[in-house]
Length: 446
Ligand code: LLP
Image 1 (tube, rainbow, N blue to C red):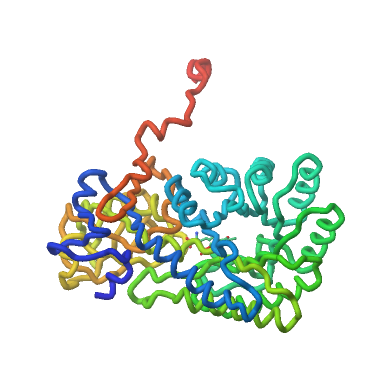
Image 2: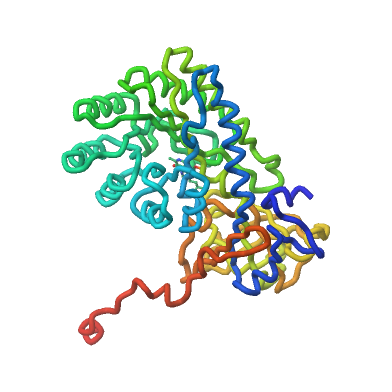
């Protein structure tokens, strides 16, 4: 069954029910409640291995005088999903961690991620972000000239981490407009002239300029725009005074299949090969020393390891639709509403039952856009059943909300037949934790 391929590597059907990492999903739902998010450790590990093998094979050739891995060439983009346990997993895996500002830096530090592995990104970093980055990071990726001015001031009192400049190549990858970033007029990064100016400022102030970065967008499967961006970046690098051990970070963004119609999964090895070849041939052509190549995937490392489990509360048949009303949706997964993302699903019990009707799956929230699946062939299911939505590991919980005062779901780590809670479900008390009462006199006046 194609749909099963969307699920984590350890997914099997036992006693006519889906199991992941040897865990009985009905038992987990009974113990932890729903909606419930599951992360399969084996799939997470395998995704790192896939990237590392490809990097080693494609960019490790002594023929080019480059011996990978001198250090890890992989940075995990924490914005896809970050919590203490995921940051600890990054540490165990020796991954670098891309932190968007202070909040993610705090999580990285709490997990013991070493300074040498922390890269700080962000457009319009706040003073607090820059302060935290200066104290705790190995690299700050500078987005704009105003940020660089602030770093020049900070350099008078702090020793700065290495700096990479974020180049805006004027070309995005093919993806939803809301997830494109590399195009001209994008809010991210600096154009060629600004990069040259930034490099002058770095030189003039003896700031440690060590690399160039670009990121053209997210959830793409055609790497060709990267070839052009790499060429432009190498051309730029030639004009800068970078020393031998310079770094090139071509961002992340490699896509995943969310729906069986999008299978096979985009090939990570082919993507890495494309990037490595473009860098090697580009450097040879313009006589540049090969850079350290630092890839920065988020989604393609964690998306398929994650599964969302929902309880079906009601089946509603309208004139033209069968609605399956779930106990989660928009608040834990805003992607369908934001990007029209298409998802698939299977019932936990009897996942191999033949499809009998088209279903629309919606959540409980007061929003017509709270529909996570549209027009999916599905078996006849009944209220009370569990529904599993695959490819739920990236940009769900990290973009989740408390809309309608929803409580964010619990998250479990599945490893070798065991389930460990890595985030507990929010409680009603959590919802009130930040709130303060009106001053007493304002109540009287009212
Ligand atoms: N590096 C930088 C500088 C980025 O901005 C991003 C993603 C990544 C790496 C990782 O991209 P990934 O490999 O995860 O595609 N909320 C959207 C995605 C926004 C991505 C933002 N930046 C979504 O749900 O599709």
